[in-house]
Length: 160
Image (tube, rainbow, N blue to C red; front, side, top):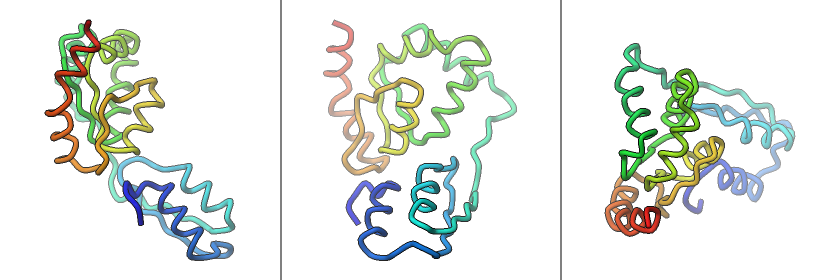
């Protein structure tokens, strides 16, 4: 299956290999649900059961996240790296609870934004954030290498 192995590639591979009508499919959720995949499989006639493997929950102590939001909102961060969609969701949820969504977005516009891959990027885009860097191979090492190679140039272009 071609990288980056998102739900779209999984669906394309299934479409080429099997008729899904009448099939029972279980989806292991990896932190956040994927209603698009579920709907696409059901539209092809499959019965889908979702199984949440784990859920990312906010910590009891939100102070470090609130401080990070304040730092980002002030524009004091040069590079911000996201490694999963739950991080993005939690960041904006806490920002909204503190009436800081707009300042957060403005601060993120000044920073270089890295996304580990297309699923994370999709969540960022749902919040109006377009990442500057998404590695071709959706892996942490690839993300860090691309950020290290490109961040300064991208930051200079954003701030001049």
